[in-house]
Amino acid sequence: EGQTYFAKGFNSEYDVKVAFQKIEKQRDYIKSKLTGNTYKDVKKIHDFLVENIEYDENSESIGTYTIYGALIEKKCVCEGYTRAFKYLADSVGIKSVIMQGTATNNQGKNEKHAWNAVSVGGTWYLLDATWDDPIIVGRGVILQSTHYRYFLKGSKTFDKDHILETQFTDGGKKFTYPKISVADY
Image (cartoon, rainbow, N blue to C red; front, side, top):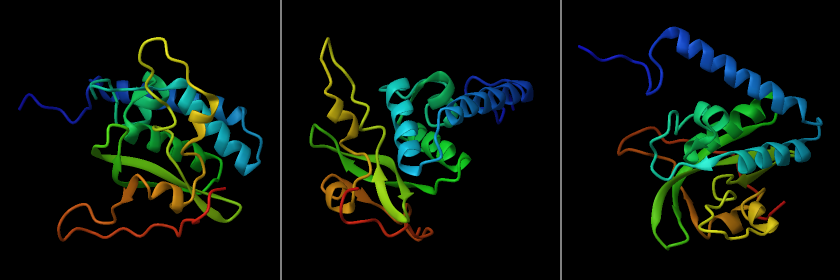
């Protein structure tokens, strides 16, 4: 009683329809900037997310775990980045999947995390737009190379601080992921 199935920030079916329209409009805008070259389009999608999203450090924004949070609110956590990347890549026929596991952050702590795998030229590489979008403290300057530390990397690079999990609960389904290139793109 007194509960609804609507996510935070949505109060009616109309609100949900408007949200879908906004998402589709943003998708169409991004698609209009793509070239049809898989590598260039993966990079453009990655760059759009890195340049336009702010990481939601408190996980309190509307849609923080969703495509809506990433593309409309422009504030989300890793799940929002990964879902948005997959949604945009899928919309232009680029194969991608969402990968989940744990990752060791820059303070040396393990945390639950999500990233993407994407097929370029028939080979699967890993991509972490969240970690390519650093949180700037104060008036710091970010080198351009920082935005590509986790862009189209092989398992040799990613396995240093990302650990893929194929089963999320005891006795739960075991997920199968594509075979990832060992080497970076």
